[in-house]
Image (cartoon, rainbow, N blue to C red; front, side, top):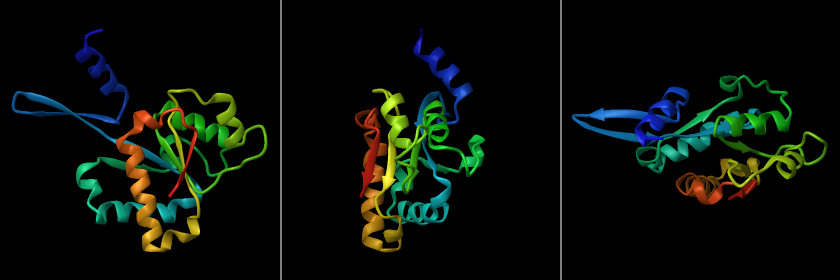
Length: 161
């Protein structure tokens, strides 16, 4: 398939890849979308603020999305959330989802994770995000994953910082 035809089709079905036209040159901007777990929405605002304050948003197109944007409810089980992230090519950021049960995140990763699956970023201690140094370390790791996403595909969970 011709690469332009592929990209045109991809643009139609995804808001992750934005087509921009400048004069006669066409270029693409990849937007990394993070799905924010419902229980860390407040902390996500702090993380996004740190991304902005450190200048990352100037060079790394990032968008934080909530469950509602993808038709998820706050009581969606881990398997449903993970599948939604995979279908929509999102990186899930969570504090900690369930480790036990047939629909737990851990069980889902064991059964469904593939080499092309997007990772789940788990913040090790969400209570420490009010500490500037801890928050900056978390943001640094999140940026590392976003910038080098191909090397993190299929890893399952990434604990940060």
